[in-house]
Length: 261
Ligand SMILES: N[C@H](CCC[C@H](N)C(=O)O)C(=O)O
Image 1 (tube, rainbow, N blue to C red):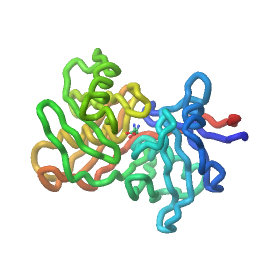
Image 2 (tube, helix red, strand yellow):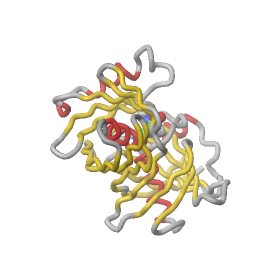
Image 3 (cartoon, rainbow, N blue to C red):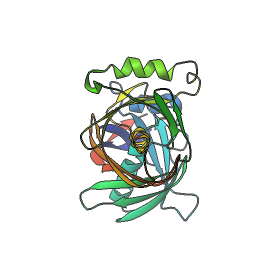
């Protein structure tokens, strides 16, 4: 079978996108998705998404996300921004949109400079242990503050945490964070890709939230990733509660093509 695909990237977190509004690709197998995401034998991507028609008509579309290993993933922030850019390209919506994903409903605003603003689910718990935070921003994220982030071995240090006794079975994404002049630098080891990616939207969101250890109120945190800049805006409403969380950044069409599966 021939599949038409689009390739997108958001700060270097890259995705294969397939228009599935006709439901032709409802049953992609794990090896097929892994093959499409393979950088040598396939198209290449950190994940694959389907653009679906929402079963609930109050949403403009539905997002289905798979990790590069071919397994269904939890929420993907950069993926959500890229799929929203694709929904705009195919004419679903122009200035704002709503969609439903594995972690619930999302709102999208298309900014004039090409950035896509994605509203993330509220956060109402953050585990703060010795030297780490752990929270869920649609996907689970372990966050550790470090120094010398540019030289660090994110693959091996991230992998050691992802496969430790606590996380081995279900997995976690692992974020290393260093404060910069006006924000944070974040590098992420992603489960399901089982490697460092250039950027992870839900990870960047989790890291930005851990910076707000003071007053309740509005925060805007500029974030640097290996793949470029993002910004996270949110409201801190209680000791461990955060609402109105927006992940903001570029989402770019790269190319399209056909591949046989
Ligand atoms: N790259 C993604 C995260 C994918 C989630 C995945 N790695 C998992 O936890 O299953 C992001 O931008 O948020």
